[in-house]
Length: 140
Image 1 (cartoon, rainbow, N blue to C red):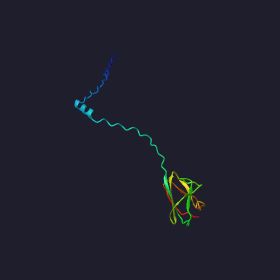
Image 2 (cartoon, rainbow, N blue to C red):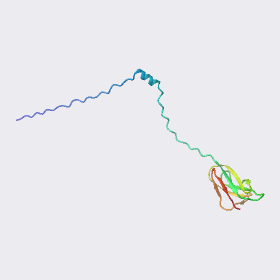
Image 3 (cartoon, rainbow, N blue to C red):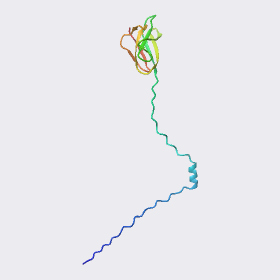
Image 4 (cartoon, helix red, strand yellow):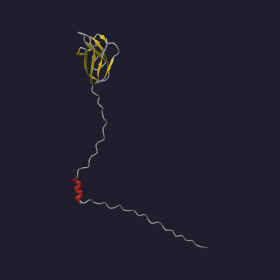
């Protein structure tokens, strides 16, 4: 009978590599580092933006009409300080031009002209919004 022998080599034990030793800065470098400006601080996270309600803007309304000597033109409406119950007097700028500046329109509104604050102009209501300059030719 023949003997077979096998030779096995056992693996070598694993070796752990050592980390390199930390390099210490020289004393001059450490002094310079301590005298250097501090590192910038990150800004705080942005806070949510709060939107302010827009301020009311004035509205200029101009009517191009000759209402005749001794008559006056009024306007009534639903916003910008106007009411449907009592008219606001327009200023006569020339013989056929009447104007009013309404402060504080915070949104769109409807308005209509009246002759002597009694007779309504013909047609539909007019519309205006904050900051508008409106020129119309009403008919009676």
